[in-house]
Amino acid sequence: MIKVAIVCKTGASTWLSCQVISANLIQAYSKIDDIDLTFVEDRSSSGAYGGILTAEELVSGNFEKIVFIEHTPHPIEILKGLYHLSKTYKPELYFHVYGDFTLNLDKWVIVESILKNYNTCFICASDKHSGLITKFINSQNSLVKTIPFPVNESLFYYSEELRHQYRQSMSWSEDEFVILYSGRLSLQKNILYLIEAFDFFRRSIRGKVKLCLVGWVDDLGLPYIGKSRLSGMMDYEIQFLIKKLFYPDAVSMIQYLGNVPNESLNKIYNAADLFVSPSTHNDEDFGMSVGEALLTGASAVLTDWGGYSQFASISKDLVSLIPVIKSKDKNSPDFQKLIIQLIDKFKSYNPKGREEAALSAQNSLSTKKISNLLYELLLNPNENNQFNGFTDIMHATKQSFVVNPNSPFGFGKKYNDLYRELYGDY
Image (cartoon, rainbow, N blue to C red; front, side, top):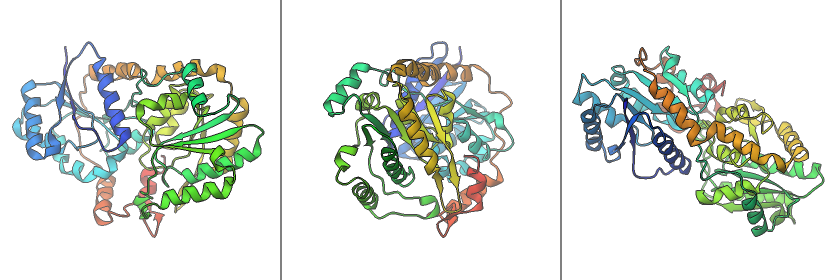
């Protein structure tokens, strides 16, 4: 039986989505029966000494494969420890890659020479993110695999009872068409576009409609091209736009629920009729909130961007993709196509198909399904996949972050050629 170590930390990530992903990955790996799995605590957040302690446990365990599932801390200290403790111990290394990979290129470059001693595999959650990571790795596409992040089917599932209960508690009538956005309310996620599109949509149809916003307001801006935001600016712009477009009906038309605990999201997804996200965020490698909504049977309208594009493979009837218009200074969802898709989903909505849709999504994204995919990956030898270094564009990107940390992908608030080369197919 293959001996595999899963390296994970005990403390929670500061990013809510990464907390969820980590917990779901642990659950998915825990469901694998035919592999000798050991969960090893990542102590490297305390520094080099913690990395050495973790590496010692891995070396003494003589594991054949080591899987790193966290996005932070970076495994740099553990990798240093592994190499220096034993030059002859050569486990296969697997790294689950998150959307923030490009933010840590300096650390990956430091361990480049160490990684050349091991067979490696980088596991991405979508094909488009795999395509991006492949651009960073020398000439070996086989080192990059696509396996979606799992969604916890015990927390997210279809329930007509939950739907009716939550709608009643929120005073939403049964004939009211509720559009839901869940995630950060930020410039990167194009939340202002969504509010404007909803205004056009509600003027174009006959019927009761509502936009429900879930998440926290984020003033991050577009740091890759130097677009910073003053604290509180995003909240001001959202409130101003809502009052401008919807007064005096703002309260009844748009409902902001704030940051909702993860365990309460299932009933909100069930109560909503359509999930919408027009995001063009650089780090949109998957879309955990999208996956959660789909497991409740909700249909979705998403940008054809990053990891979002992958969801259309679950069901073209369930998920509609809108094009992204790319220009020098921004990537924007096709506004007209977004409105058309909202109208189409409103006219074609049939609540009777939700249970079947939820089961279809489970068959693609549940922890049970992803557990099977991870099992198949670990079961097969990762031979002839020795790491052969990073590419020139990887080093150029890393250097751009060093020289222009506040604007690595643009100057004068416009995207540069490096960005277009990396994200042109995103």
